[in-house]
Image (cartoon, rainbow, N blue to C red; front, side):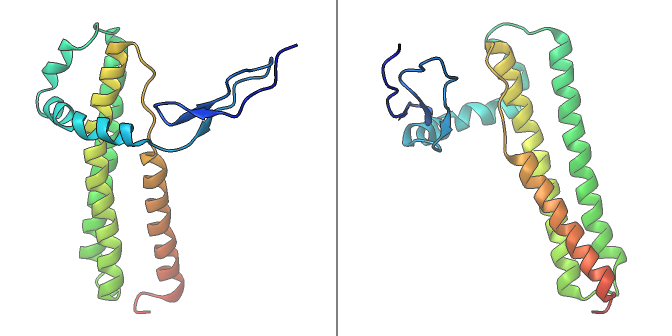
Length: 171
């Protein structure tokens, strides 16, 4: 029989893992980024920015993955850009075509959509670089909270539009 499990201790990545398993699956508790994680992130900004502007430099990292995976990563990048363009177009449409809507409400809706579109475009290139690097290094693909943030933003705009439609254009 295995000894008693000890309390999980955070590792350098901010993840807690039990010292002994006793036959049970390892418990993983996310504790948030450590100071070392934040420092590594800040130190890596120049490299990531360089890869945004010079994507051919990604070839210096690891080995070339199966081209199908790189093409799938590129298609995902383009899908995020299409989403960004749709949000930006929606922001302009709200501002230009809902003229009977109170100006503060119209501007709020338009700005939310425009900011969401801009964030989506920046996220697209960042995610493309992160995924390409991970594939070349043989690492797990990165995860992100951005899709959840974007979904919440779109849901908030949709709920605001429902309220506007229910109350009427002029409020």
